[in-house]
Length: 450
Ligand SMILES: Nc1nc2c(ncn2[C@@H]2O[C@H](COP(=O)(O)OP(=O)(O)OP(=O)(O)O)[C@@H](O)[C@H]2O)c(=O)[nH]1
Ligand SMILES: [Mg+2]
Image 1 (tube, rainbow, N blue to C red):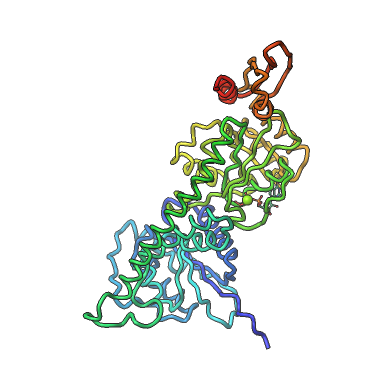
Image 2 (cartoon, rainbow, N blue to C red):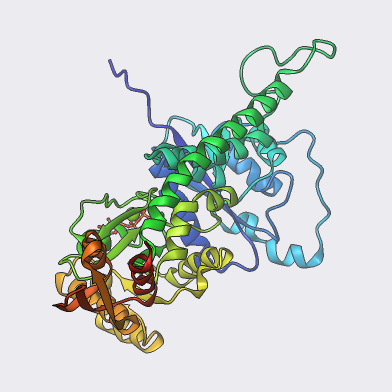
């Protein structure tokens, strides 16, 4: 007898608003499908509809809602739903869509899908309405992303951050109907379970915040120890190939996977073969369209990594037809934290998937971009040269006097600068060095200190 639990089945729901073209709409639903797959669910169909907005009480129009409910085995109606009058423009936009787009679904699924996954952020009441009409569990895009982060978080910092984001997502969605008994008590039964739950969440959030602050103090210290070092951050959309490039540039074994949000923790490694001073590369969490705000805020270590780097490499999957929109998502997240002042280069990755005509078109449109494949060693080696040349242009030459009494600092000098020559006189060593201005200033300061 088969005992393992069956894979949950899911139907996707997408609303195409007037500002979204067909390619972007398809891509968004495709991406949602991959997110849902990452969660371990199987997508058995999708329902999509053109509408003016995503704010309607039941998200879909009445007809589409019935089609969806037919798939999931629900009634198709939200009892308390008020139907808004249709404007002329709205009728023109949405008009024929009800019938023109067939519901896409696998032909003979005997089981009814248990999940309806909507490609937009929903209000708690929209979720409730859809659940009533479909008899399925409803998750929105944010819910899916929060859940994936929750499952993938590895380090203590990431775990704490994700738990906070998850609680913040869950709190407003708590409702009487969810969970076990005790919720149906009438008035007078004392504090309701619901407000008790809410209070518990608030307490837990406060506790998490304290723990997180402690962990972050440690990581701030580690980061500030790397200050003035030559630092490059790989940033970009999820699945663009950041970790693949990280592996190729540093010879490290960071996780590379063809799934969304494979990386949730920042890793820092040295560029190989090692340079003097050495260059540090950081791999960071990927961005995604509609990344929930709490998650953006909580990924402080990735964002600080980007903010404090001397060079940002924006990695995109050039073989994805929507890469330009994906790049804009990454740029706008970084803009929000003012990391857009850090010098950056655009890396068009996965060029091995692009034919000559596509390559020529990209080259014409983005003459400054670096085109490469993370899987091609020559490309990676050329990128290494570009990174080194970038820092070389920033570096200055200087002379450091290292008194014999302070020989202990020699390691720090070699770590932070390139020693061009070394002479001895009666007071100590005279070192000609080359390095980033900040690093040299700091070395001068520690030499001057008593
Ligand atoms: N064909 C091809 N595939 C690539 C290339 N670079 C990466 N990939 C593949 O793209 C997928 C995602 O790569 P990752 O390096 O994990 O991407 P990432 O940007 O780190 O993704 P997240 O950690 O999820 O944000 C993997 O299946 C890689 O093998 C490339 O240059 N060419
Ligand atoms: Mg990664």
